[in-house]
Amino acid sequence: MISQKTIKIAVAELCKKASFSLPKDVMQALDNAFKNEKSPRVQDIYKLFKKNIQIAGKKQVPACQDTGTSVVFVEKGDKVKISDVDLINAINNGVKVGYKKYFLRKSIVKDPLRRENTKDNTPAIIHIEPKRGSSLKITLLQKGGGAENCSQIKMLKPAEGYEGVLDFIVETVRQASSKGCPPYVIGVGIGGNFEQAPYLAKKSLLRNLTKPNKDPFYDKMEKEALKRINQLGIGPQGFGGFVTAIGVNIEVAPCHIASLPVAVNTECSMHRHASVTLKI
Image (cartoon, rainbow, N blue to C red):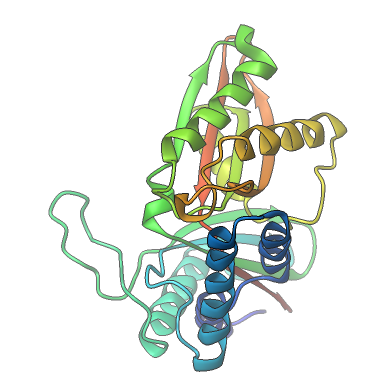
């Protein structure tokens, strides 16, 4: 048994960890981007990125003022005895505690048109995936509004195929330009249907940037998409340069014979996420 209190405390600490530091793979990707740039102006931007992250860690303040929507991915082992309702409540209570305790900006409104703030950044958006085993893995992704607003979905014709998907990925980034705080991490969901493709795109952002796609076909596609995106010349914060994105991750799912859904989820340079695994 994993108690609701244990989950609440763990999620609250994930809010802190995600806000105040970046994962090692993201830091490594930003360092590599810095080495690939020649312009002193562009190099200065990366130096400011690094200084900002160092200050965030040292002073325990958010690396970005937009502490985002709390998107939570849960891998729940079949031996974990807690109902989904209790699990959702525990996660939301953890978000409430974390955002209040660590003075993180509360950005969620109760209604999309009436715009009254919930004042605790809940409800979180929670995805629960059943697994075999006795552990509960919780991953918190803090998704900033600017980058999220640049995301797109398109129902392509199957005949548009490989090149059509690549064109849509690159065009989405071109339209985003500097609005979502590049260099970007680009999550892509291909297949499923209208609601599954965006989920796949969001989930793909969680894959470590140093790990290639397990499928050689999509590994090649990721590399080609990244190459074409970086040829756009948008660069960090839109100041030009060789690196507009530091990674492209693709997730796929089976789909209908008449459909080719593609979703592109743009993620900013402050790619904030953290995980914890709890065991019974």
